Image (cartoon, rainbow, N blue to C red; front, top):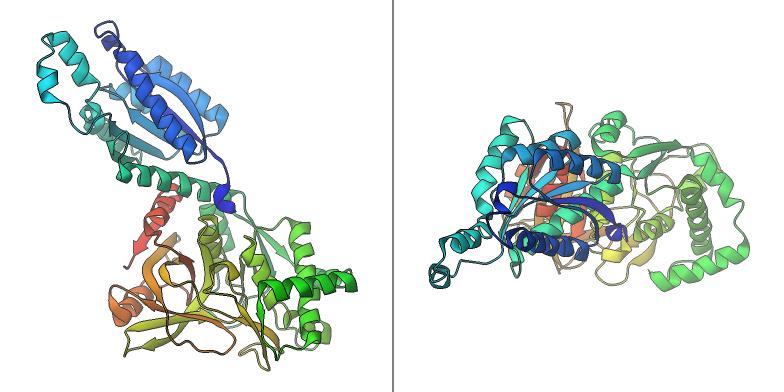
Length: 477
């Protein structure tokens, strides 16, 4: 799973060195709290570079150097007690990494009676300083804003606070996805579907703002790889297809073997170029070999998608990236477009022809033969399924006219009910703003007509990812 990739994060606490000789045990107590934060982050699968409690500008500079050496993806700033903003700023300003300010109090509330019964005002002040995490947060925020540094905050209790735990998990998860994108090689094979103006993309812009690499290849390579596949391998792959899919009785063996041969060639192609996602389209007019190839890719591309290599048809590069993002969060990423509106049930049907995502299907994906691939050449095997019933999230990556890449997001519910049984993926979705409201709000933001759908509600995580990448985030519901 892409979502299991380890990332490296930096953690530094802040304090004021003037306090340590004044209040016995305070320093060790605060370091202990910081170690609890480190353990939380490690429990979420992060490699934590914990530079300890920074209490002077000199130590701050050293911490920045350590974070640079360790190539941290994200910085967590733990406010352990009051600290001077001059101690905080050098680390963040030098690194230019996302920073999350952790305003985590060790207790939900100070025990006022016990506190006031201490009888020693020095001890009382030390106890207060161990609980005054919020004290310097406004000062830190002021310094960051005046220095044009973006920051984020998590406020709550150090232990047993579900809000804090969920926020930390979301940040680690989003940082992991950002790291995955920076390491992703996206294959592009063929050409755009002629006339789909919304699908045409600026590859340089997408590469620079999302961090991916595009590897532009030729369909001739896949054609050549098909010749390397043995009959025994084809037989084994047919068995694998029958195991993974619900092959319908009207699927003939010759079509299954043709799909299996192409599937094996696609696997070799992905391996040879170390691809982590793929967008494709080809007509193949005038050459029977290419027509045979392009008409037999659906099953193999669905199998790749199930193995964390999302494949988008119609050369829809932006949606290929949306699918990769959803896949990296571990929630799938089904290639989708609007199919129809059900005004009686206030439902939007979304789906698509071509490859599906079997791992987020409601039940086993069916394989059906089609005599016509609508709008495309050839005939052959296709897949039909619905996305798992329950919470879902839609993501569109927008290549906007202002030169910026943006995320457009909506949350919905995938519901049981009748679908169009035409050998395509399609599902029924209910939106909190209704079918009419959703269509108008979504389309009015200018996405392409495709989107990626994942299971679960992850709009909050996508918003964090957009923040990490420096992208605009738009949520319609």
